[in-house]
Length: 80
Image 1 (cartoon, rainbow, N blue to C red):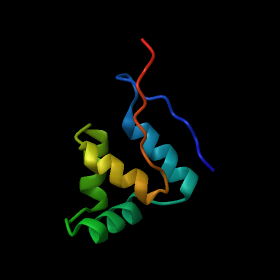
Image 2 (tube, one colour):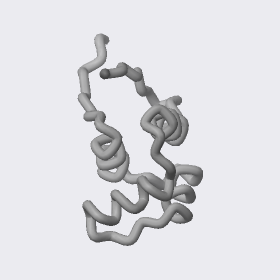
Image 3 (spheres, one colour):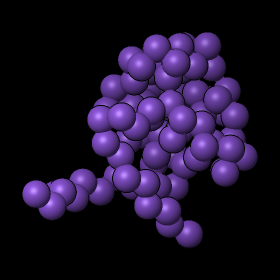
Image 4 (cartoon, rainbow, N blue to C red):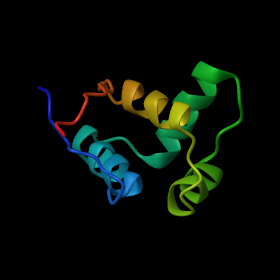
């Protein structure tokens, strides 16, 4: 089941990720564990939450999170 989310400069990526975590019944701790497993970088629930709340999440980390949750990111040129 796909969903479309229009993201612009006012979109809070933290809220989008939290919504998707809730929909997929995955905790931040489980997400951090999966991210660590896939990247061999140490993610904890504490540093992941800090990244989300402090708006310090890198684009590649957001894409990884979406992939873990079963979504992909499509960039579509906006109509001018």
